[in-house]
Length: 154
Image 1 (spheres, rainbow, N blue to C red):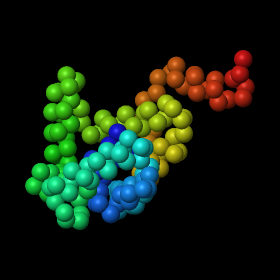
Image 2: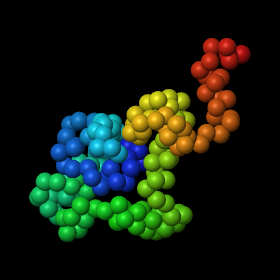
Image 3: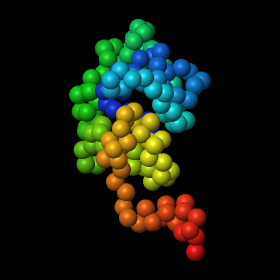
């Protein structure tokens, strides 16, 4: 979810046919039944490829990409609990899926400064919704300004 910025509800609703091997994107149905293509990085693609091999040992049914040990679709609650347990096991404070989405948006904005593209990646219909996710500190804004604005060059 961190790699793609997906909502937990979008993650659990991804089906096998939404991921095409050899492609670098995932087809996602978001809020309002809007479909969008979400780019995947090489680490996410590799993880999904590995998961598909593991998934074959659990079930051969089409349908949910992410399944539990009995072959059923993961639930939002099961992902929330798994993330919390994993973080605690690693000695970290508990985390939740929304924190991953929020971090995705913040890190993308810090590296690109392109709020409009992030809006598309997150599947927001309104730019004002995307702005809620973007906690930038003042120093970072100064860096972006200095780097981007033609009159900022000293």
